[in-house]
Image 1 (spheres, rainbow, N blue to C red):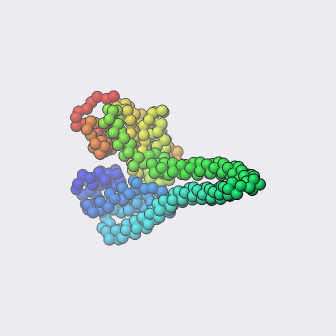
Image 2 (cartoon, rainbow, N blue to C red):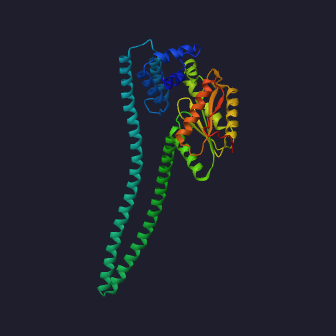
Length: 368
């Protein structure tokens, strides 16, 4: 069986008390089932909140599919595939509807703003027509050579123009106030939407897309100025066991509390914490070399293993495994991330609750 299948199965920990069981499953599970398991796992790690499908509900469904896919004693592929197709077709429809509704809401904001501007422009145009009519009447009075007519029309024009300017100034102030209010509202909504797009809904950490953007920015900074960056890639040890034992509600609390701890590893530091998958997290460390990154990994391990998370009536103690790396010269973002992921896998393979340093093909040993 291919190595990727074994690595995938190890995430689900079918029976850690019996390592041979994992080998047995890896030996007999088909690549088709393993591929489906990978798809379900990836979908589970990149969910976003949909009105009809809360994270917890979807994860419970996907976890059940994962358990059935791992169960080599259940060969009924046809029934399982039917249920998978049925779920994904329903979920995708609701997911698409949710995205469309969100898009329609923003179209409504833009439309209201444009409509307000259009109304103001029409008002100005109507008033300009009245001004033109008044000017024509004034010219006619001048050409009539009648002093009384000229006096009367001049007074009417001055009164009209003064009134017009007063109304125009008032409308302009109202318009600017309304525009500023609408712009402020729209800016707030767009900022909230941008934040939602960048953040993980459950934990408040940055999401996978933001994480990849940050890695790219670190790479560009390194290429342009030589500013070093390091990376911690970590996940929670035996997280599935926490979910299975205490439920997803408790698992959610653990995820949220972990993010709080990661954000506060070094107060005032600029480390960038992102949730990259279900229980996987990445911490980008701009302007930090490998020695300081290792120190931060040690701080994280000690802090988390010594903390107890309170979730309802439960006190949960858990640990994490970490891969540590520094971006290398001429290394792509994908290569950087892959090296760190391999280091994380080594930490899990070697007993967990530890960090492993990513392999450096150039034997790079210095640190900033």
